[in-house]
Length: 553
Image (tube, rainbow, N blue to C red; front, side, top):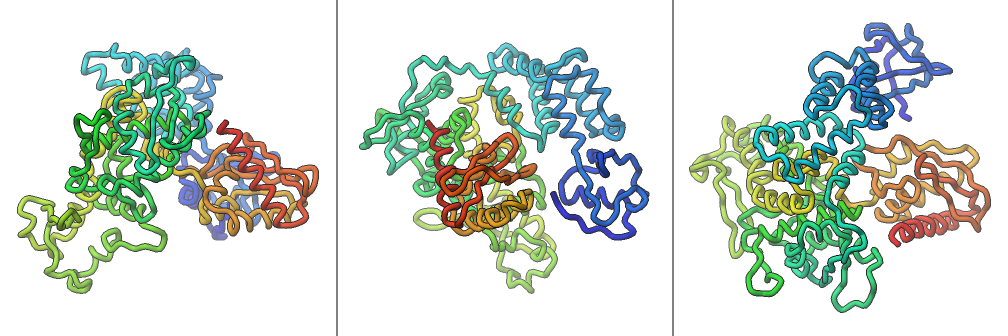
């Protein structure tokens, strides 16, 4: 639910444009309903809002036609022919429309018009590629292009169906088989486990692993494994300064190749050493295994690095600046990420005659300079060439200097999910935002509580308790515990880039002695009428932690 302020003379077209700005739903995908019972608004774009019945205080229901179509496609309730007939005329025929893209997909995967289950056909094709049954280069290239088309078609749509299909195509061993063991030193997560992980076959990588921490007694019933995955990325940022660095917002970004090339550690038997490529590959394997175990890792990867993994490197100065700014800490500002450095003369910013087409990288024992272009050390940055310099600098920082790390990390993912750099199903069917959400740290920040509250509807009978609920989330709980509350009520431990469709708080029977209840399918919290804020905080904490503990058993 959101409140929109519009002008008295605004047209329906302007209203749709405002909805696009606020929700990201394109006007041709918008289905507007109003009145009771709700009726679809079929008017064009030139009519004034008052002429089509939208007046002050009017409740307008917005539905996403593309999402509705994708839901129908995934339901299996319709044949492909019936789905084509259900396409709205406003979103069919023109290049880039849902109809045009859907027809291209049907042709690319050879899906017949009488088929009902789209994913079954794709699954058969994907399995044949992963088994090596498609050897000819031309059919393989066509299939890879079809996978990319499929990813774009389902962009911004729930990736769970695609992820389930990917996992169903893998040769996962039977549960009764022996589970590989990983022995981990808590003081050195990566270096103590890398050789063991690199020595595992694909069958072992796809198995349920057992984790044993050195010097600790205990049996891994699943909790130690989840602890390993959730701690792994956090420890990379803390322990592996030669390989990984933290961005301002706390994401993992590989160090420049000049720094990472010096990293090494003994192999399993100590006869040889693992180099930086081996260690990045081991990291990729762990991230891939975490997907199969359904575990989030302790830190997210930077978006620019994940874009490299999926073959969608930032292009152009605008995208490079956007990725740079995305990783800044709240309130932080980087001159390279804004327009000021391009619009103002270098003399006004104190940079005149002080810059060259080089980048200084902190290495041991002393910093090194890397030329951004041949002869860059002798090229002065001027107002005439500063845009080219800025793009070259950011490209080296976010792309060129970490490409080798991306190739090795990608190799680890391919070891788990199969395929090749062009046909790995995980990297072809999920985009960067999907993977960031899949791997990213669970939890809810204090800033995200404001969004959570904005999409919530609550019963007036619980006004006092609801106010306490938000106070407890904001002031008493940390990010992790807020994530547990969210998981208790919705099944997800993070809000993610797609947000939530809505959240409900309704009364529950009982008083101070009762724990809150939840209905995850409806994003609903059932809250007893607690007598004090402190009681609500204690009961909510218990319910959230019991839920997470039970899920981990």
